[in-house]
Amino acid sequence: MNVPSRLVAISILLATTATVHAQVLTERNISLDLANRIAGAAVQACADKGYAVTATVVDRAGVVRAVQRADNAGPHTVGASERKAYTSASARNATLAMMEAAQKNPGAANLTDIPGFLLLGGGVPVKAGTDVIGAVGIGGAPGGHLDEQCALTALDSVNNL
Image (cartoon, rainbow, N blue to C red; front, side, top):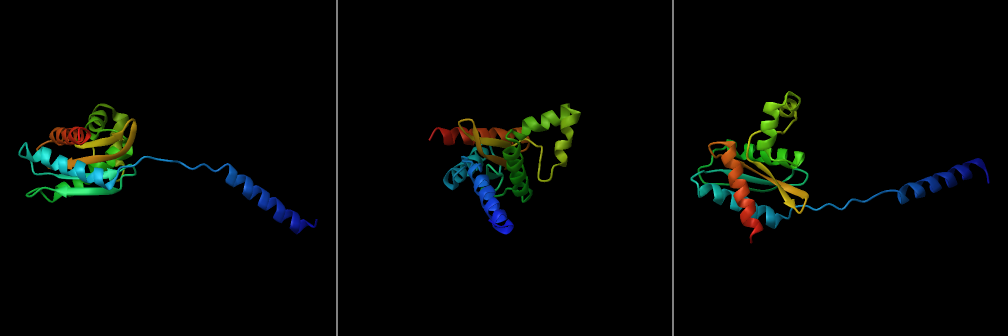
């Protein structure tokens, strides 16, 4: 076997070996139907308390799956709800807890510098068992803690269907 033939044979052998060791991940993710149900339940939960809000639901990667904006919700609530949902999905944590940690821990204060993050209450992970499959973000209630309450109410109502 000449040198070029050996190089080709070695290249094929290495390429074949490399593909044998490749791994494929299987991840759980939120469906469009569930995202729409959560968004609707969140807007309704806040409406029941007199708050006009926007609810955004993102998938596990932080990509928008559903948005619902209540009548009379301010235009700023759309962006705020999306950023809260993205932050929660990305960090796999509630944004209110993240905000409180950043206020108390100087090392966590830099979280506000991450592009797209919004450390205000109202972003809550959506879980299937222990897997975070997305997040819901709400903006528009008169306080992030109230946004979070509406998100938790919505998740609870969807889980009980």
